[in-house]
Image 1 (tube, rainbow, N blue to C red):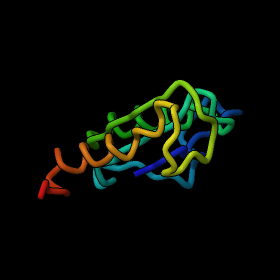
Image 2: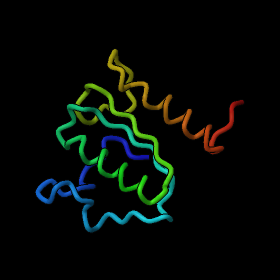
Image 3: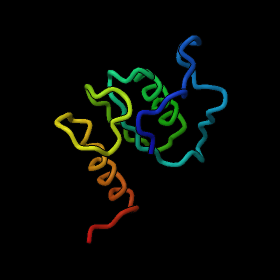
Image 4: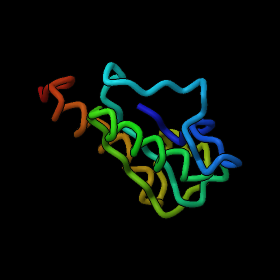
Amino acid sequence: MLIYPAYLTLKEDGDKIAPDVRVTTNTPPTFIAITEDDPVRVENALFYTLALKQASVPVELHVYPEAGHGYGLRRSKKLVTTWPDRAADWMRSRGLLTRE
């Protein structure tokens, strides 16, 4: 799970995947959450998601409108604070969590 991920792409090189970030068919299924106003640039998540899809890696991406960077797990009135619920739904759908 990548929450407000950074340093995945090279802005100065057309947002190509960074050389130290390897995406292969063995990359684990990935859940990503980020906000449009994150100063580390939403493009990191968008282009990484595309790379995962091209490698046939299951990925779920959530782009929230606002909250910046570092919102973590604290609840607020911002929509992004629902990301842990979405992550739990994703883990359940992959058989990684079961309801009690």
